[in-house]
Length: 441
Image (cartoon, one colour):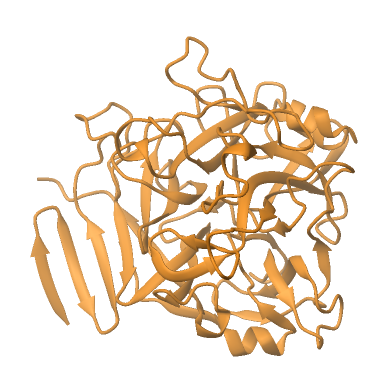
């Protein structure tokens, strides 16, 4: 094993992958001086473990994925879980063959063990009548419990897509930024919301909760996708401080929603690239909207953070237009020193800190925060030589998937660079994120 020392980094080159541990005092992600309240935490990644091979997933009835996107989990018994993620099914799928959408699968934090019947929970076009945000793709996302008043259940924020044909390519598809040779259907992304009232056995799509800052007209008919990620929900108070879920008072708690956006002219690295933003909605209002049966109420319950405004939470998260023709509120990047996409955030109770994992170039990185607005520089970055890592997902090892301890798990799909989305070449992997306080100087 060869260890290369670089100022501020320790790089371990081990066969086909690098583990990079940033050992630096946490500072503001925008690159400025130290900011009070930014946690002083360092991280290192363990060696990767195969969560599932493609051949194993095919044997369960899946043609691609799971998970073709970030995924979530509901605890079962004896440290087993029901996982929820995006997949396609084969003709041999026992439950819902030859379709794509949201499926559940089973296993431990170490290994996938089954398909849980290979039954689709929801899919493209299952949103409210007349709404197009999920017309061509709908699946994926974190699973978060809720309880307010006499109602309780589970929420999945998920990735929805509207597709078009690219006239500039023979395939009619769009390229994947940073992955020469990779093409996917051209899409305008959104984040929808699905609800379960029967402990995750079934889910119903209730509406759209986030739209990109730029309207759909900027993208349709062109060669660029607009990706907003899969959505990640965290429960906290008005100042971003952690609250238990369900909170003691749902009327003073918030759901914070993390997503990807692009807004030309944004500061720093975000001027021309995708970066990460946050929206929020009052906890009790989100639950009420989700159970209301009114998609317009769902579409107006979240507001984006815009730190430049006197009221930083005044930007509508959607345009509340079923055909996506309207323009949603603008977003403000949470850090501007680095582009990033596909964020997922959980709370870590051991260190009283929030962790954000996200896709950064061909690898994945982690940052920390105490208030969900101010974020550290990356405390750990992971790369695999010759491969690109997609859909990083954080799952806590404490028995509660949304609550981490000293070594939460990060899951991702690893593809040879340029091979995405050919799942025949993919490996579903996990690594432990080993957290600690830095040694005193």
